[in-house]
Amino acid sequence: MLKQDDYKQHISEKFNTELEAIKNHLLEMGGKVEQQLSEAVEALVARDTGEAESIVNRDHEVNQMELAIDDECATILARRQPAASDLRLVVAVMKVNTDIERIGDEAAKIARQAIRLAEENVSPTNYVEIRHIGSHVGAMLRKSLDAFARLDLELAVEVVKEDSKVDKEYDSAMRSLVTFMMEDPRDIGAILNEMWALRSLERIGDHAANIAEHIVYLVRGQDVRHRSLEDFIEQVGDI
Amino acid sequence: MLKQDDYKQHISEKFNTELEAIKNHLLEMGGKVEQQLSEAVEALVARDTGEAESIVNRDHEVNQMELAIDDECATILARRQPAASDLRLVVAVMKVNTDIERIGDEAAKIARQAIRLAEENVSPTNYVEIRHIGSHVGAMLRKSLDAFARLDLELAVEVVKEDSKVDKEYDSAMRSLVTFMMEDPRDIGAILNEMWALRSLERIGDHAANIAEHIVYLVRGQDVRHRSLEDFIEQVGDI
Image (tube, rainbow over all chains, first blue to last red; front, side, top):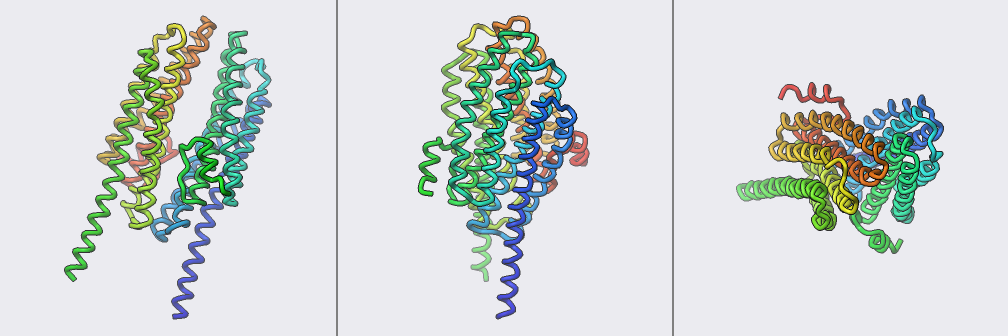
């Protein structure tokens, strides 16, 4: 019997290693996307076309990571038939994987707007809104990844709260850009590019909040997506 | 032994029923979202604020369907431990579920733009682009759902091809809206609302193409996401 127990333990250790591996691969991809985002905002503000092009060209690396992680997850589901919290981890990784890849797409879109903006004359806005919202959603993304790494519910709740703030900042930034447009219609093209970049940043905030919601599912086994902020906080309130 | 065989057959039939059920629930949700999309475009063009508000208010129904389908999938994974094509079906349903829910979100965003547009004076564009691209992506969505229902690779390839056409139509529509803006800056507010609606339509086209790619994974076991159109067609070419 001892031998069989050893064998079982061996299998179980190997399984744990595989689960740790998908989590680490996801976090690695998250770190890469976080960097792409901060570089894209930097390239836009600094009018650095070379850097922006390099970001667009590196988007495929994140796409490949997404495919590899989904593949690892499918293999674990087929071979290990995980249950309970192990199963929830695999499901959460598959969902978060989609959100991180979409954040990568949005970072590449910001880089494309940076290339277009560099071709225009100097913006009348000095990119104040983009700098501000860019650093805000960058911090949200970092927190959501930290929360995933440490299964930290408190941090996850913070990210969801931040998203409502970003939405308000976004609305106010849009209103001020419309005013700039009306003041000088010759700037319409440049300001539209800024608006698209802002829209991408707002979407990145949404995806970071999605990641936070998946962490709640992972830790608690409760699906808190599509709840209002109040419900969400109440749901995870006793942390 | 007969009894045990009966029992096994019973289990297997029950499992097949469950797999059919998640597929049907997904298609039902897809049908609902397809309707929301066509109603949202109709409400925008007809300046029908009541209809637009009703669409926004019904978005939560689609959200609930998404949660229920993910829950069914997690239960099947935990209880049935599916393998091979059964596992691929469950994974594909979980992925397509996310895309359909996002299409529902975009339809609700279009309805919100419809409400804002109804408050503006008559648009100078007569919504020509929105009508056209709206019916184009509506057809793509319908085809992608049909392709999923029938596991029809040929139809899935068609959807991916259509997406490149939609992207071109979108770019050209945007250029003409910028021209309208510059001609009369008083229309900037209204035209921006049209631009956001168009952006949502373009995203819906992307999601329909994602659904088509998941069908290829489901049928062939090959992941064709993030391929160029040529690679994609070559990959599924021998259909």
